Length: 182
Image 1 (cartoon, helix red, strand yellow):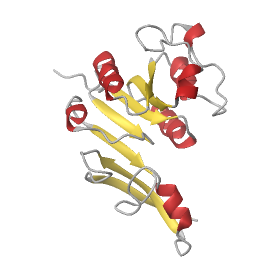
Image 2 (tube, one colour):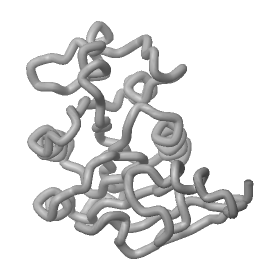
Image 3 (tube, helix red, strand yellow):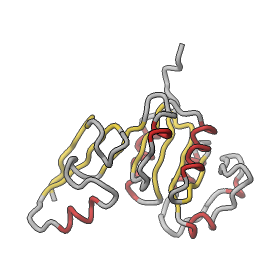
């Protein structure tokens, strides 16, 4: 029988939206088995990464205790909850495959992850990937929706969309949407 509390991999970036989504999952007692964050080379160099590439919560010397990019770090929050994390260099699908293999998630939750996922990655997680996107899809698909929202002078509302991830660009089935007025 399958565990009723699915193992969830969180994918995101070092930004406020990813941090808030991660904290919300923690507050709702989601069983997060690992965190994989897309990073820049500058951000990766701030970490002391062990040979496995995994930042283990029981290794305080290997944690980014101070992060100049955020007041609170997702990796620090994960560590506080004994959740391991791995930094992913941009466009490194091999590192993402390693994270999936290491953490063995049943489902993956995404918030602001900058990479389009290929079919072999999407198929590697039993229940698939779900994404939190900062626009009312199908409008403003892609990696910079907020730019296009703010650029639209005649737009006085937007919102967020939760959708299933497929091989397209923010084109998976919509699960939930919530409009937000400016």
